[in-house]
Image (cartoon, rainbow, N blue to C red; front, side, top):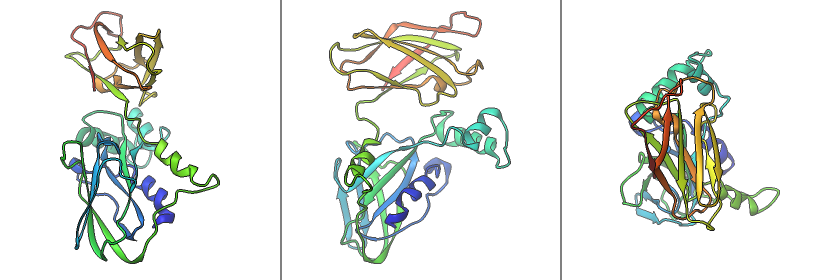
Length: 287
């Protein structure tokens, strides 16, 4: 199992679960091995807030937030040059029903959010897990189940946790952890009765703490320009391809950099249609 760990993670990257009705790939491993499972679309999980429960015939093992047996808990995105992304945005099948699958994902899974991230968990199975069927269950900070319960077939034999080692030795394990989403990242989303063509707004922050970095999850759909003067971040959002956005979710972006006191200046929000006319009622939400 351990030699195919990364391949499994990538292979399950778009196995969107839960309301999509699609199951993740089956997982079989020995007790003590590291397994990778897909949990669902863009879940609000991190090693700082997630509890992992692994249940076998001998009871339940609980890994609390931050437990080292949770090796990775982060998001994997589809290739921006994939047939899925290109076909959906150009309404072409490309021989694999790419536009159809893209439409299904947005309609039944993401709520028209084009940030198609798949949350992946890599976790060490307990070394004393009995042979047979086991389950992996993930809870959020409120102890509510997030994503599906994943079945694991525990094989006979003694497994080994994946070392994540390579030419740089243990540094590779640190690199895997560094690929997880930063715990301080905030998401800015928008709501309103009319979808605008462009939005400008200011974010305020405590001066002298952190250094901002803004993230555009879908640079093929919108351009994000920003500037920071130490206390105020000016953000301008415009379509990348000069096509009117069809959903407010297109404008979503993230802010990181270990900032303090981050907030939206509601009075600074300005929205416009494609002719430059003001669009009223646009609200920015910071989560």
